[in-house]
Image (cartoon, helix red, strand yellow):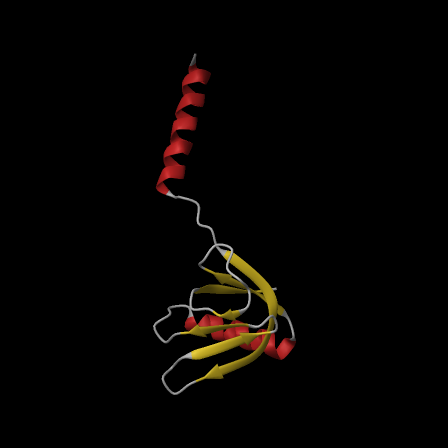
Length: 104
């Protein structure tokens, strides 16, 4: 009997946890950095080999880390994974929904 109670409470807890934290669909694009531009208004623009371009705005809390990763990728030739907020977004063109970068 105790196992049934434990199993039921585990299933209920997992269900509540899934409701509290809904799945977040994003798009990830693996590519190389081709150029990094920094403007006088504090905006950093990063362009990628697949035709994607993203601004990293001054108010972005991850701005310095993203700039460091993009610069490292550019200098070393390593790829990055660009994470975009939209689900199934194209990995080309100008995007304004940058969530972060992974150095691969």
